Length: 195
Ligand code: GLN
Image (tube, rainbow, N blue to C red; front, side):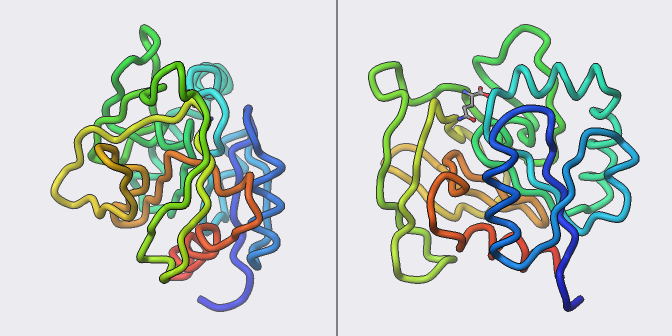
């Protein structure tokens, strides 16, 4: 497909506006998604960073959880950053009791895994899929991927922590590219919506 793909941003909670801005800058048309109907006609969907427990509760309350699961299972390209990565994991550790996920990624993710003393940090990350220039990654109470299934591609790692992954049409980062000026990850995702 050529032209501008229509990419939704799940707009229940979190840094929706930052993702929308970055997607538009990278050549997508953007729609905010707050209902199952709004999932129709999208070529891709972003689950933003924020707070996964709140996002999951709102998704459940607004009748979006099952439609989101169906859309991901049907192959809609999805990108999750931070809380979005947690929402897309099949299994989460240190979850709130009863915390629901959308799932789709054959991974186990631990919430708030980087410890209290370093709740937030920034680091230049090697991410070969983006080219030679490192990506300045912002981590805020970030999750860590602790197990990956055989079909999960590891796109970036810190010592002892996997922080960016892709499985088929699902992309996820533990950090927040939407809070930087570097749009290479959004561009990579837009490429995924075209295939
Ligand atoms: N710790 C948050 C959660 O569990 C994620 C933090 C973030 O998205 N910056 O949802």
